[in-house]
Image 1: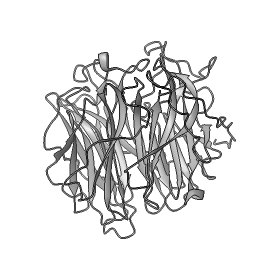
Image 2: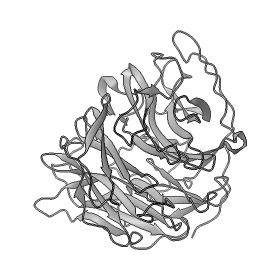
Image 3: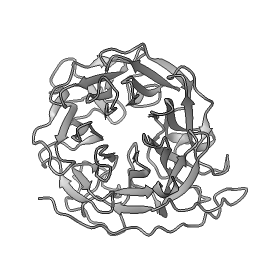
Image 4: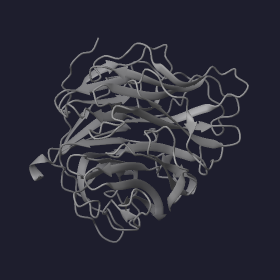
Length: 463
């Protein structure tokens, strides 16, 4: 049974950035206005790769999800109530994403894998897997008992494939002819290649169209550099759909102008560095990291934005590019983090949200600028109010934490609406944290448990 819990707020103090650069110390970041950080993971649980969504009809309502648990708030993130989403006998939820539709219904997309292949190559010994959608009619308080299967493999098919990294989004535009539609894109790993698949629902998520391939070019067949990875989409006020992903060493775009019934051939829009960071290009204390992109649109300007992170400057930085001609041309990459270039500090696992009410561009990321050893991590929120031409960086999660032996996952998540910004991320649990259900011996028992935090900031007074 759900229980309402007022969660302890983290102190919103700013820690000095001494040693942030090998050449000079960066000035300490100001705290984000109205900064608040709460823990939403129930005590004794562990999770990573969270998602968050805000209700466009009721902007004070938001929901975060990580693992088997969701948490809903009806007071703009001041307090959260945890809710169990799936029972113990259901496979763990992976790669979760959330979307409210135009009627305030909430949808959770996720993958579940009953049996995976080798760690490096899914195709050797894979089993049952698939992508599902769960619906909540009341803003995350309750969830339908039975998920809808979008593409599911039992595991004994001779041509079994692996479905991965689903992302769901919705058309809530008041002027869109396709308002109310739900859309989803994901990776399908095949023996010879990786491709991006896509589907849509026009009946509130009850049924989904047969998936279609939207990646003109295929990627390599394993989860590594050279694959297609990180699909995600957004919708313009006229209902045009923009879907992007990494395709090798570029960001690729696919566009639909008919409500997702079909797509134009996908095409690379600009080059990036490798989207996977590992080995010599790894981030200290992080087993692996991805820099895959996000896309957003300012409905008033009609401007598209894409953010990503890569190591073109040596250390990892966060970048943004803009398009004012519906994705035909894009500006040169611009850094979002404002610490000195080549300072040896990594900024990684970024997520972007464009506030459709004021056009602000909000980017959240893990940040190591305050540690000359590039080990201790905080969370920074960068915000642009001039159409993505400049960013102010704010301290959000100001207490540093070490990531050694903790799996942070492959992404964070950020949403923004009405001058408020909400972000969610994973970080190591406090020392002495005890899991209510110990990990099975087959898992990586040495990994430090991680908990889910939600941060909020309020910029309304600045408008």
